[in-house]
Image 1: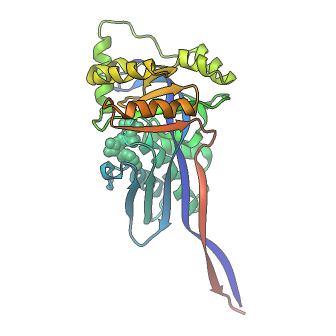
Image 2: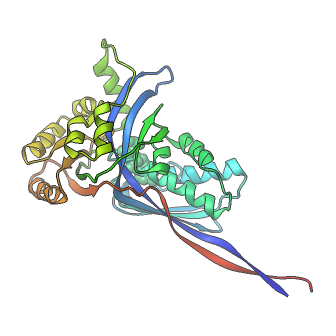
Image 3: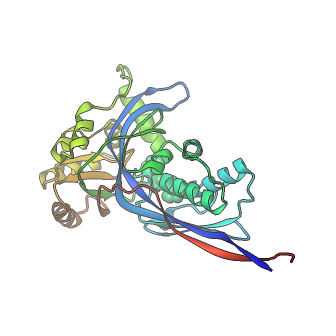
Length: 318
Ligand code: ATP
């Protein structure tokens, strides 16, 4: 007699990028981190992470900006798989394939998104059945932006950004992201932020009522007024040419412009997709940025897209 069971051999996960609608940065803590109050907002640029059972561990990256993404243990997806394997005593051999659509090093947390996707994929592949709370704990060990990637939508992040509470949000916001090939290192931007604030009293960070009320009612003009990034002066100090880009976009009809996260990407909030396309066309004719990406709000968070099963037949004694 034979009996059969199904074994998962491949899991595909899709995960969106984020923009920080507001990023309030508190004073530097004794451990070197900063307390944040930030409103994360997922946008419809998705990386896909496929994790397949394999005889050896491997990682490949294709898609937008793949040539500058490391394929070794410094890749956050690699670290996510290793962390899960060592934490739960799993052998951990698998092939991770990342297909990137989230701009790399653009303050849109693409690496963090890939790490979250890898946690979800490995949990399913290895049949661990981890709880949401456990996945969030692992995510927080990997980086401050990783837990939000597990949640998606719109959410308030506090602590280092890793304590996540979903917030009620309605409406769809249209964005144009202007990318520059020259990067800005996140630690350098925080250090510059501290330097610029020397001698000033820095309050504890707290989210603004105006922004939360605007996202609750889906008021794009309210969001345009309230959007704010405390790291922007530091990013502009390290890369002054971003200022001309922001000013030009505002003159050409953006509702507002803001450095995205720690930069150097600039996020333009637009009244419609049509306006976003028009601004991209005007900007692309000049040389203020190197590349442009359109995106809109997405209610979708991380999502298991596909699971491949293998049927295992066992001969059982009669
Ligand atoms: P940060 O968390 O530094 O603000 P970011 O959101 O600006 O990051 P990411 O796309 O996450 O940008 O890339 C930051 C750096 O992380 C890249 O320069 C790259 O070397 C490294 N990195 C590691 N893993 C990945 C990954 N899976 N995808 C993209 N970059 C990665």
